Image 1 (tube, helix red, strand yellow):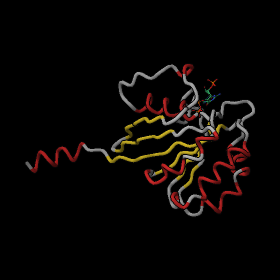
Image 2 (cartoon, protein in one colour; image 1 turned 90 degrees about the vertical axis):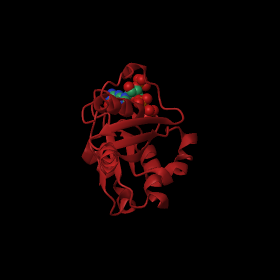
Image 3 (tube, helix red, strand yellow; image 1 turned 120 degrees about the vertical axis):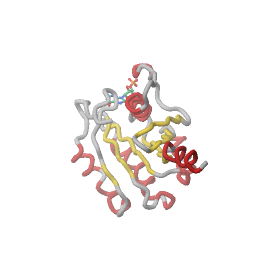
Image 4 (cartoon, protein in one colour; image 1 turned 60 degrees about the vertical axis):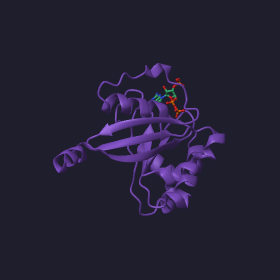
Length: 172
Ligand code: G3D
């Protein structure tokens, strides 16, 4: 019995809930779809050209090594943003997607509210500088400068800003 149980334990994955936040059109659905295609064996992904903007909750599970990441893409429309904090208690980490070609001040305003939330105090944040293929995209240093006002609110939590192109999978 012990052998059976310890065998089962060995195959069990640690589960983490990750919220995907960001403005409408930032590329959240595309990122999630690329992650599922890249990491989940036998996943028959949908054609990226058929992806429409996330409306409501879009949940996807991705297995990476011994971890199972449950991504909750909450949708970025203005009226939905006020519901983001209802999910803060259920998260282990946050991905904040900046479509690097989007209106940077609007994205920064939404990001500032996220990092100011007490419920996310100390929660690691990955700021995805998506759409790095765009001709008019902001570079990572430009994004860091534009978001520098938020640095004190990020505080000592882990925060990284990788660049990526979710559309092609580069950086995912
Ligand atoms: P959302 O879920 O955050 O609302 P989507 O965003 O994933 O629906 O993407 C919104 C649009 O951005 C889509 O184009 C999608 O193809 C595009 N997009 C996503 N990631 C990238 C990227 O890395 N580079 C470029 N150039 N475009 C990207 P459409 O035309 O379908 O609206």
